[in-house]
Structure formats: C-alpha cells, structure tokens
Amino acid sequence: MTELKNIMFCATAFAPSLLGAKELPNIIYIVTDQQTASAMSCMGNTDVHTPNMDRLAQAGILFKNAYCSAPLSGPSRASMFTGHTSHEVGLSRNNVPVADSLRTASLGWLMQRAGYECTYGGKWHVHTPSMPDGEFGFSTIHPHNDNGLAEASVAFLEQKHSKPFFLVVGFDNPHNICEYARSQNLPFGNLPELPQDEWPGLPSNFARNPYDADVIDYEQTLNYSAYPTRHYSPDDWRRYRSLYFRLVEKVDAEIGKIVDAIDKQDLWKNTVVIFTSDHGDGMGAHHWNQKSALYEEVVNVPLIVTLPGKKNAGKEMPQLINEGVDFFASVCDWAGISLPGGLHGVSFRPLVEKADPQQVHQPYIVSETTFDKGVARGWALRTPRYKYVLYDKGLYREQLYDMVNDRGEMRNLAIEKKYRQILLQHRAYLNEWMKLHHVVQIRPEVHLIPNM
Image (tube, rainbow, N blue to C red):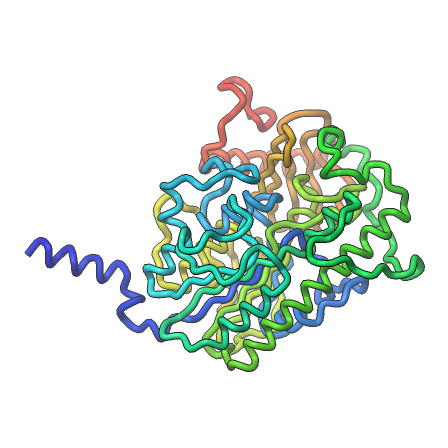
C-alpha cells in the first residue's frame, strides 16, 4: 500500500506530463550575447535596423526595464537555468562548473520531468562553451557556433513533436565585438565596414560622470585584453559602435530564419517565444566597452515575450524584470512546475497575460557583478524611479540616478543632501536583498552598505 501511495505521489508531482500535456505551450527561448536593450530599432534606435526583433515586438510584449542578473555570460546564464543568483551558488565568474547538486535541479531537468522535450542549440557557457548532450536535461542540436544554428533550429521546428517542446537557441553575436576590439578576426566571419561618414555619432553620455566610481577606471587597467579601448579617439568609438550595430543586424537576420519557421509551421497558436540577451555592452557610453560594470547599457537587456495566439501583441511594459531568476520562475509557471524551495524569482507570466502597464509586479530588482578577471564587486538596485549602484571599494563607490530624467547616468545624486532619504531607502532595499541572498559581508563590523 505504501509503495502504491509513493507511485501516486510521483504521478501527481509531474502531473503536466501525464494529464493534459497538449494544454502546455511550447516554449522557444532565443538568447543573444552582449546585446544592450537599446540596440533594436523597435526601441527607437535609428542607428541599427532589426526587422526580425521588431517582428517579435509587434507580435508580443516589449519590456523596457528588464535587467540581467549579472553582467557576465557565465553568471547570467547560470542564473537563468538554476533560478539562483549566481553569486549565492558560487558561479560569480566565467568558466566555473555547476555543482552536482544544482545540475539535477536545473531548468532542463525540471522541464523534462514536467513532460517537455528539451532541446538546446548554440552558446551555453556554464561552464563549457556548448551544451553537453543530455547533461542538463537537454538534447543538443548544434554546438556553440552561430553558423548553422538557425538552420538546425528550423529543422527541429519542422519535425513532428508528440509532446510540448522547450527549445533554447543561444546566439553568440553581437559578442564578436570583443574580438573586434582586440583587433582579431571575428569568429563567425568579418563584416564589411561602412564608410566613416556612415558611422553613428557618439552617445550623449559619452563622457565620464565626474562622480563616477573610480574603481571602474582601476578595473580597466587590470584587464587590457578586455578593455583595449582606454585610449580610443572619438572616431575609434564611432567605428566601434558601427561594427557593434552591424553585428546586431547580423544576428537579427539569423533570428529571422527562426521567426519565418514559426510562421510556416503555424506555431504561434500554442507557443511562448521569449527573446533576450545575457547582458549588454558599454557601446562607448562613459568610454566603456564590454560588460561587468553596472552602467545602464551593460545591465539593461532586451526582453520580448510573445504569447500563444499573439495575445496582447504590440504592448510595451515598464515593470522591472530580472532576466535570470524571473525567467526561471516564468518558464516553471508556464510548465505547471511549482518553484523549488529557496528560489525567489517572480514569474512575469501574469504580467504579459494581463498586459496592464499599471500592474504592480515587484518593488525592485538587483543585478550583481564581479568584474571579469578583476577584483571589484558591485550591485545595481533598480526601483521604478531610481537606480542605486554600490561597489565594494573605492572613491564614489555609491551612486544614485534618476532613471526618468537621467537614464544616461550623468548626475550622481548620492552626493546631494536633498536626496538623502531616497538614498537611505535604497540602502535599506539592498540590505534586505543581501540578507535574502546570503551576501557575505567584509567583516561583522564592516558592512558593504554604508552606515548599515
């Protein structure tokens, strides 16, 4: 009798795979690498042309305030697929293996147990470049290589599927801007350069804020390979931005092949399509390239969600999303999986299904960083109006910005007395978040947050 009860418990624990699997939506997750939120023409950027990302935005819901969990590939992707903030599970840097205890509870295995066919193509980077076949609950259809990835994904979509599928398509571009900055050949083919008079201009926040955290400049000196741009001229930066946008356009064309296949196979009626990136790029703002720093261009990422039947198509949403832990929670929600204990992501499924810009979601989200091959740690806490940034060391390590009037982060309000109460409130929020996620302080008597 006891054995029978155990069998019945197992059946109900994974009910979606046994009861009404046809009602579960397919989920297609398209992830680029190093694409900032503003690098899409549907965001009003006239320096880049992204017709296929725009098609997704026209068919779905566009979030303006989605942020990566961590502005570095490995940590960001680890958060997406484990549901934890990367630092609390020892994955704060690239090239760190996932602990065995996390592997079996990772998203692919949860989805597979819930009745999904789980398939992965392209960049993985947690910690191997490609997804190991079968190791995280996914069957692999293509390695870490943008060439041929769209075609492999299309071939998968053209197959007959006896159960709902969860397809992840991980593109590398526009990450090739890293090789460009190092004067190397681009891994997936060099691009023809535009003439100089067609290069985009410099961003309005090209200059460094005089009260910016000085640890950022220090980190540049530590890692020349990542930041060979320290002595760029204005025209060097214009050329950089031109190539960056061309790389975005290149990956947009690849995404178009997948969107065409969704059209051709008539998959919109029962498929959730989510498009995002693991983090952004400095793009010359504050003279910064690459990631790691907590500038808006680095942590604010694209997020477009297309619902079955293209419900609420064309809507734009202002709510705050952590495109790491919240993604994990959302996919679990669509699959009918209860969020595992100890996870704190908030599903954005109710947001997109209601599509009310006034709907309350969560009071703040946090991105955290450990500089790639560097020493500094930092946190960016975003509320609806403000962004609070804290680094663990250095001059002006504390920053506060009005994201309505100063999205370019040029006026650090943390040094102004009249914003004192707002500063204190954001310190309290971050302290609350640090406790929830077990952030270790420097010493019991030395708190990372001032005056805590």
